Length: 196
Image (tube, rainbow, N blue to C red; front, side, top):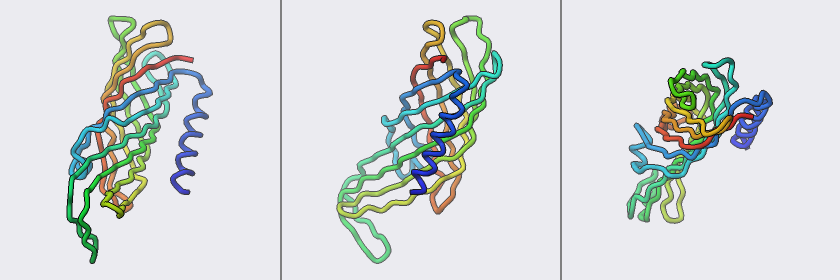
């Protein structure tokens, strides 16, 4: 229930700021595990999606919000695992579901090519992480809301007025909290942007 409430508040906050009608982007995200995440799951995630909003303060500066979802998955194979006094032998699957929600500040660089705009961005917010092990009939899981930072470096290419392609490389940092390690990851976001 707590998760649904916080997700609702996050979506409401982003939808509220979109009244300013500026720039939106929808992205497909490829995730690369790092640190504690890579120790639990070592494979690349092809299951990610994100939405970003930017209110342009002037030609170079913008503020906004970002929300995304990334699912990491790995088939570990047949394992014998101990949990307290229990020993379970079964095929093991590891999962991490991450929901980063950030308030963002962006700087757009002036380019010699009018339609090409490099940018940098910093997001500050929270990331909900759920870590899970499936062992046959048993599921071991833990979750937490963690403080998060998200630096990003990207580029936008305008195809026609108010619409174009967007690519960005971002790092979703999560601080250890709630009994859960800081499950951070890199993301390659590829998508489209449009002005409204």
